[in-house]
Image 1 (tube, rainbow, N blue to C red):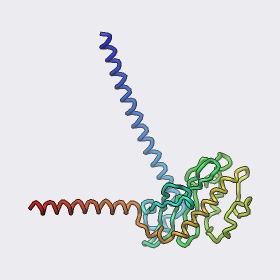
Image 2: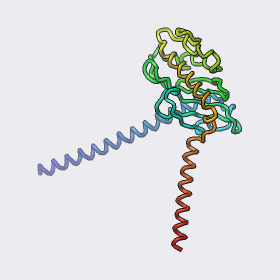
Image 3: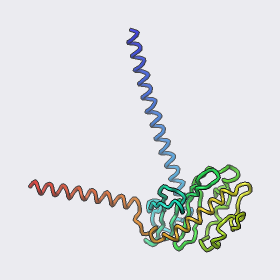
Image 4: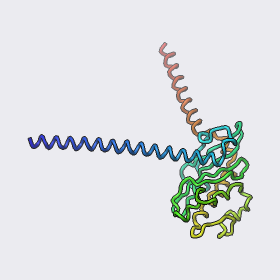
Length: 234
């Protein structure tokens, strides 16, 4: 009887453990999906703020490519570039670059560059900078980030693409120079990347279209193989 009770207790404990693990996994998946959807909605809002819908007739969120340029775009991982077009003509590219040398780590940006090289605007997507100091890079906390709009590689002069403390034209924050310095450098590097790659940015097939074409070609090859096998059998 004692052995039977022990086995029954062990089975119940094991069952509870399995159920508990399943519930945790389901909760994690649901939370993860919610976080991803919130990030997607925030990204869409920023894309539309930087390049308003009246300026393009395509879907920039899906007209996207991925590039790898660690020195200019701040990440060893692929960086996304969203493209805005009007009647198939380039309007702007929104580069999801990173300022890697923020005070508390990488600062994720969206750098929107009009076709021709002028900045349509810049937004901070995520960061871990000090609240009350470095977080003034957020549009909702100050208008500092709006100073990039209309700038280009020639405005200001290359040697002035710095914060004022370093001899440039961009304001720094009291008690927080590292954060704005990192963003100014990242935006400038994004402009340099755009200048050197403007044609390929707009001419490279969109990522999802390229994957779709690859899938279509694979299906076509499979169908051709099936036809060949049927013909050979006949």
